[in-house]
Length: 624
Image 1 (cartoon, rainbow, N blue to C red):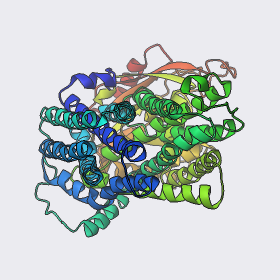
Image 2: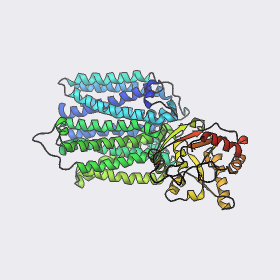
Image 3: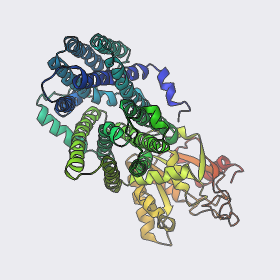
């Protein structure tokens, strides 16, 4: 586990040039798109309905994600990603030159053409943008890297939106916008030239130029992944559904319910974007540097809670004699509650989306990663279109107010994520593990780097409390299959967690021979599949805090499956809430500081009970 903050990545060449490239791309997208919308609404002489043209802009930008994401996924597999990014960024300069010409000449057709081309640019860039991260970063850096990307993206969107508003307020806005978009595109290309080599994952791939057939195939590829990945794609797209609802309705919400002017819209967008940025940044700290999908249910709960609170706090805002500016809005106490709700939605949105992106990257095969992310982009676009349809149905057909729409989508969030967590109970299990490790216990880790990143291994540890397996599983990046006494395995509530984690229930040979034999067969299956198995060789919880004699089961395991054995010890857990210490009391040591320490791996032929017990005892030391 790295002890560095995620901000240390900004000092590394394998990340910084890519980060700056994508940051400038998101910034430029929004400068151009927002400037075009403002030009249509306030500057250009047009005969068509202005609101219809604004909706046309949204369509032209999102349509390429349906048409060309599949092609971008193929490009991301076939070509070296660094070279592909440079080619895409070079194309951005050409596109922005067309858009700049449109602004200088007040030519709406050229502007709309450039907008469609920028949508195409983003559709091609998306798959390579996220598939390059696992090549450039170590697994423990994925959360931090994704957090920085999400933070940078939303702050760039905000800066681009505000920058467009400032430039468009000038009388001679055309040259300002034209120079800005071309200059930012050129800077993005220069930054891309510093991205280190990122090899092609599948150079032999034959490109299929039939975008409709390939889009369908890539969608099937993405949704056909293992459940944890396929449902993460759904969860990711659902986040963009929610985001599209909130961002689309914020201008009307600010005008109709807060009685504010354009500055109030900017204020709300700022609070929302800062919330997402902060949530993204906190993910790395809260996850302990690993891909912690337990944060996803945490984020989902917050999205629902603050969405409901936003509905609750939005009624009866006092109107003024004229529209409020942002400072005047802040003078109303009710506005602070509303802004806190919007900040909470953004904050928990960051907790929700960052681990999902990291999980998709970490658990997808390298030669499929870009195409799976392309499938995600197609789904994102589809869900954003559905969000527009849902908003129209509720607001125009059903006659709901905007706060009532926020309430409905918050309740829909419960239903969608309940479905995801039911199909992939690992999310719920990891949430409970994460909650335990960040509430009742403060866990320090020592020496866990000896646990191999891949391949089979057996962990042996002392057994102090009913939650030992949860604390160990929460500390180790790889999934761990625990061997556990069947009566503890069958405990109410905890049984759900144990079953979800693939725990192996075991009984004594004389107690239940069927359970005993089935346990060793399941352990052998896990080890053959290259997984990590953890056993508590004492066979029972300590009743006095001391180490019990190790049973011979661990020797049978390594004799039948010769794999490395790693001794471990839990320190300071005796006397905590879930231990059997008779004098612990209900509140005594409810928030316990404990340590999980690992020793050097032993060859299977050396893994005898006596030696393992000595090593675990030495690792535990005097801290029971």
